[in-house]
Image (cartoon, rainbow, N blue to C red; front, side):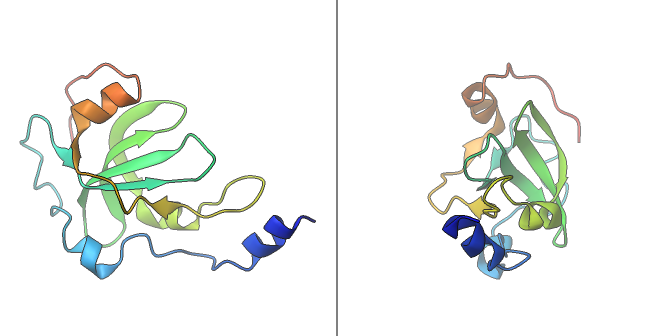
Length: 122
């Protein structure tokens, strides 16, 4: 077993990706539903993989609305709890929050990830 895999096993089973001071900044559930191009304010990612989650809204408990970029890029709902327990396949590295992310409109993020913009319904 590699030293990295051993270290990864010692990590907590769940990481807190949205501490209270970050949760307070997120728009309430359905607050951006009427916006043509809502803005993602938080970026989560799984290091060393293609998986990135951009949060636009948060229900205050577990469900987020935003953009998911992985094998495909799409807008939709995702579980914060699932991301907090996700690990990379080989080394077991947990997801992280990009502390230097600048709030960005979803249209810009879609272009960044190579997807043409379309009207989302949520």
